[in-house]
Amino acid sequence: MSPSVRSRLAARAVRAVNWASRVAKRGSGTVAGGRVGLKIAPKLLTDLARDRTTILVSGTNGKTTTTAMVGAGWGTAVTTNSTGANMPAGHVAALVQSSFVHTVLEVDEAWLPEVVRQVKPVVVVLLNLSRDQLDRANEVRQMAERWQQCLKAESGFGGTVVANANDPLVVYAAMGATNVRWCDVPTQWMADAKSCPRCTLALNLQTSTWSCVCGFAKPTTITTTLRDGLSVGETKVPLELSIPGAFNEANAALAITALCEVGVPPLDAVERINAVRAVAGRFTLRQWNGHTLQLLLAKNPSGFDALLSTVQNDEADVWVAINARVADGRDPSWLYDVPFEKLRGHRVWCFGDRRLDLATRLDYGGVAFEVVDDLNRVPPSSQPVALLANYTAFSEWLARSAPC
Amino acid sequence: MAREVGAVLTIATLLPDLLGTYGDGGNGLVLAQRARLRGVHALLVPVELDEKIPEASIYLLGGGEDGPQRLACDLLSSGSFVEKVKDGATVFAVCAGLQILGQSFSVEGNDKYQGLGLVDAETTRGATRSVGELRVRVGEKLLVGFENHGGHTTLGRGTSPIGDVLRGRGNDGAVDGYRTGNIWATYAHGPVLALNPWLADAVLESVLGYELEPVHSVADRLYAERCATLSRR
Image (tube, rainbow over all chains, first blue to last red; front, side, top):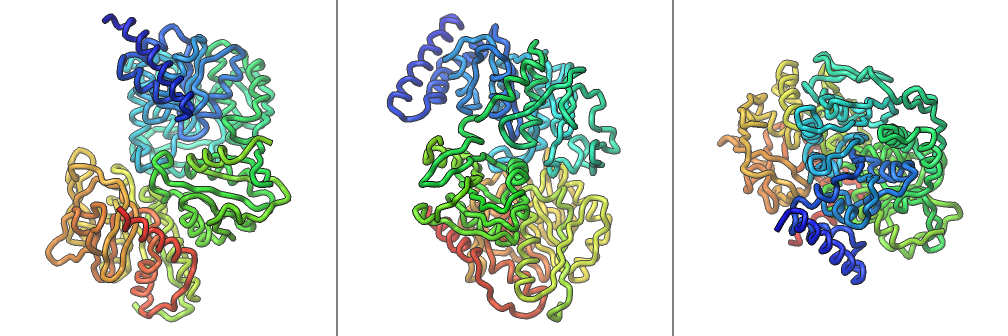
């Protein structure tokens, strides 16, 4: 059987399985079919991606939001994996479902090298890299090394890397690539880059720059800057997002830079990105049992740190839901890397399978807490409540609540 | 080392920027808070790269990746740390910290690396990586936690483990960690003292030299829940 015939058959199988999965309500119908397709035709992803203009988005935090921003900002119909299925089976499913040439895919960090080789993207966006699910991915420095291997000139990668110049691990990953657009965007979390990714000595971290005695340093050839407003190349870009968080402004800066590389003028892209109000259920207000909730997804210390900064300003109660299932990482030790002390003065309601781990962390951090063992016993709240949840806990709350 | 109530108990977390991969900083926080609950004035000091190691009653070592682990070992061997421990300062170490204190350890490649030699223990690269829940019997008590390491640690004849492994791998599938007069070590990484309040108090009692009044908090509920969960197969 010729490769293309095999791939056509495989694509048909993907559609069939995903349709069956949706009809049987066994899932959102994005992964099962992709798995079957890849079994039939291992080169399926390469074949499906051929002749497309593809942007890949990877990093520890902000993948889904940034992918949604690129999709919205492009201004044409796009193919994308908006359900967050960010491994090859999910990519296959997305590409089978839609033949639009313009394609933006979020990619799991560990899968990025493989997906870059198969999809041959024109742009790879690297947002940030920090500790996340260490029971699965082990070590964050190894990840940076593997990214560097797949993006360096000798690897055959011919596209452009759009990279966060303030994240030393991202810089290490992108430094060998032929074309890089360095973006100087605020990056709050530096705890995983205190020792140099190249030589392990202490990095000299200053307010707006960093360097190491070995010569590894923040790139100086910056083309995108987000400080007192966004500039992409020579263009001043009026960024006024509808979704909260300084980290989302950084995500938008990288999305707009990536779109600029595929010919979308930044002033056109920003207008469309400013209008994005919700991403996969995040950021919008939802109803549950008489409560109005703003669901916020945070999966790891840096993600939590960024969200805590957005909720710490008032004195309102905060709800936090923590699970430690396979998709979350089974080890919630990272709760001690989250600066929950920022929530002193608030009362934190602890939900999820690992609510006792959370409550203990808060207790030692001097934060008032309530452990919620019974969902029916949550007293009513008069104002909207921020609910921070990690991956599977977020999904549960999304399913449990309804749009306002 | 007996101390009067009211004296300052200094707890130093060593090189958290190199050894602190899995929330290991939590152990210092737990020791300091549990000491404070008993009226002890505890001072928690993180000692970062390029900082001089201060005098402290308890030194904490966390887990880390291979490169940082080697660098941490170099830094600790060149300073006054070894002397301070030989003089009786208490050390509580997890994971990579456990390996560093021994005679030697192997990291990437299988290159053998000289440890600090404070404990008669040698770590070689295990055949597989151990990632999962760890349950250890320590006398009458259970130690519960999570391990994620590729080491296989062999203790010298005179060195006692911290306990017997009931679930997970620990040093070698049979025993976990070690306990000498003033050194405690376990492969249960991260905030193992948050999960095991009795162990935190045992470390504090060994330093303070007197029995602590019991305190009750949500940590007791967490410990009971983890013990129950890890006892189910």
